[in-house]
Length: 60
Image (cartoon, rainbow, N blue to C red; front, side):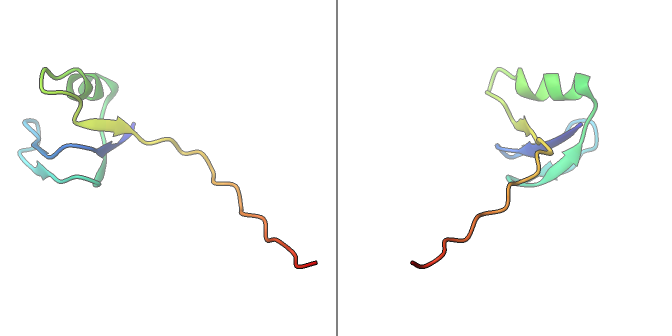
């Protein structure tokens, strides 16, 4: 599962400092740990929704 960091933290599993905006893969159990922290959620799930192309306006 891909997640994005919303609050900086030191990952206790890998020992890396996770900066805001970075994305990494994590198991669902680890994601639950990072979102259910007493200090608030540290990560948010990244959805792979394709963006709709913007429609160009034509001049009349």
